[in-house]
Image (cartoon, rainbow over the protein chains, first blue to last red):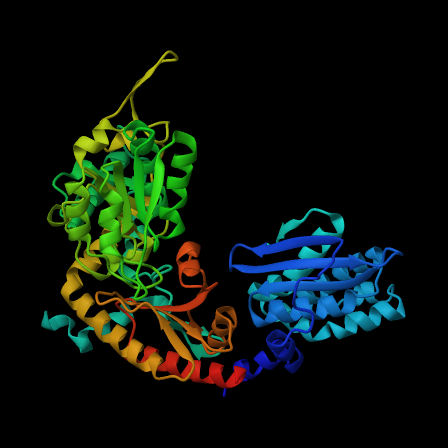
Length: 161
Length: 411
């Protein structure tokens, strides 16, 4: 099999195939404080996201329903996992670091400024870094994050271009 | 046509320079012709020669170069009229693409001729370009929009189609001649007869159909026919609207500007005759030369040879893909062209497309600009392989082998 085809293992790591097929955080939250939809009109990927905040304003729980490829579903699921327990500011920091990782393969610039806890969360997202070699798929990985930011900003709808 | 039997068709591949490219270290297997076809050297050369030897603006200059450019541009109109067997060359209007041609009719015929309370009838298997302009007309002008359903096999439901016309309120039918998703070729002559019997005019979207079979607008008895150059092995940026002269004359202009007027004062302007009334601004002069070359290229091979070649490939692809575990084919129409949409169990179409791409195989994945059709079948997306006159059986084999790998990857 060609080298190029084998390189796909970088994109479709086991973690991604697993979370893409069996997402842990799929489903609408029974009670939620914020919600948003994300839509990629070019390929038809769609996500709905619900957030529940803790009394101190931290994200307590995230749930989603997604119709899309393995990358977008896995990204949504890993995102829902890592944002639990983070503050809204930390969500923004994670998003910007993750977006950089998805586009360029690493988030080196932001990483040193991150707290240990955030660095650990970012590490959990590292299996998605492989998308940077597939420019047309970067938006698959970032779509759930755009929806997340829309939810915390209260803009409710977003699309990834 | 013995010159273009199976061996002859295989030889035509050499006319398409891009097909020798390698992608991800593999020979390019281009199975996305329904999105846009590759260009033969004749088209590339015609455009180059135009720019190098006879280029100027058209319909304006009193100088030699402009006259030559105008002659060449107008000769393309003759080529298109011949291709469609249009009664008159003046019935050929150049647009940017099919989308613009449909928008032209939706705007000019829709607002200028249709009355609020009348309706436009489309089908469930339309491309967005044959849905959205009619929605815009509905919202702006109070013309209703009706949708004829497709059957589970992916064919137009003819009984429902006729029932939707029965009250005589449909002023215009706008329907595809061949689905870009299902490959279904619609029974255009019957659709025209039924539409006319109920007092409706009919526009056929030939974007896909004209690539695969001979179109004769007089035999079809259609009222409007649209297609785009780039799917017919021609350049991007030029498309065609054919319409009956009487209809075109009754329609107000679409875009205003130079070339479409008879005279202009600040008080009022008068319009040029058809087709120029609908061709505002400097047209796609270089692209017209390319379109002429593409039409001549296709005519030289002949639709019989092209059709036979693509039918062989499509039958082979349908049989080969259906034999792969987990593959399901969308669309089982009796009459179909070289477009095959499919789903693979446990794998999203985008993932399938990425994995095929890494094997050098280009397919389309997504909703194919036909979201309502996708929804009709309960799908978000499919992968789609589409064939052109240069497609080979070996490429169908490569697709099948590639899909087996994708299946194993996601197993």
